[in-house]
Amino acid sequence: MICLTGLPLAGKTTIALKIVKEFNFTYISTGDIVRGMGGLRKDFTDLQHMKKRGYSLKYDDYIIQIVKSAPYRSIIDGFPRNMRQAVLLPNVPIIVLLVEHMNILKARAHARGRDELDGYWFERVKSFDRFMDKLSRSRSLLVTTSQEKAYEYLKILAQEHREDGGTLPKL
Image 1 (tube, helix red, strand yellow):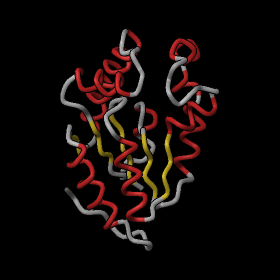
Image 2 (spheres, one colour):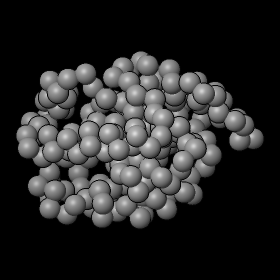
Image 3 (cartoon, helix red, strand yellow):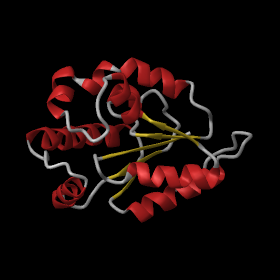
């Protein structure tokens, strides 16, 4: 199992799906689970509804249950999202994909018709930064701002995820 987390719109899903296709992994998107359970649209046009419902924490137990039962050869997109989730899988590699500058997030959001990079999105980024600070003090992470580098990390890890559950390399 490999976890891929990072900022919204950083490119996590795009990279994860490449690896899934290339290495025949199971793909699990915690964002899709949360949005599906909350009846939220994938385009995030209902941000006020998301914010009011506390969408991520409300489904924390369900996400943890799904991740615990995921196949060995899985990529978990958007996990962990908090420290409770982070301690669940102490030996699972976590790749963190960030972006170099907030303007990149703004441009990507605008290109996708999301002009709501206002207070809500900035709060998500600040919250993620606080989480990353705690997480990086508790375990080693593979952190990059490059989608290409994240893909290379994932590729190395995927190649080592043998069917028999072989050991993972240290990067």
